[in-house]
Image (cartoon, rainbow, N blue to C red):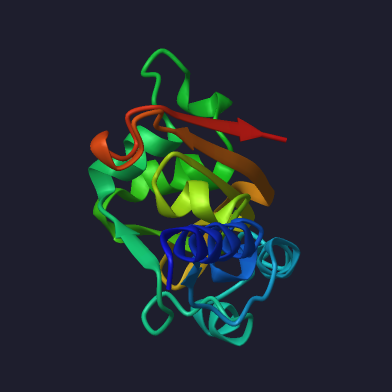
Length: 191
């Protein structure tokens, strides 16, 4: 083979790979739960009724604090920091469940449930990505966090937070490609 033939072959292979986004890596991070979406997790926590819902009811809702994955038991001092962070707020001004938890002290337990799914899909030019010159990553999914406060096996208070819909683009540009450390130039754009 001549040098011209080899150059044409390399150029053709490079051009073929340049548009091949199927060869780019993707990843997924899942916090296991019985919930498939933010809305399902939100609905389960919303079904809890302060001073009525029991630990057995939580289990039936898929929120078993002792058997579910991704549940954090919050110690009493941290419960105070989360539920009543400002000492200047009168006890009477707090939610009744929060107030009763503070008065119960160590008899009160709090559980934080963290569920979600995050998918990362690289797109763009395979050749530029492979050489670490330009990488684009689409990030999608959801994250849920629910707080449930319990005393004597009965829910006193509940609250939720999170991101029902993650949609972001991460862009990394390294003009020197493989000669530059990955991630020195990175931007994340939320939609």
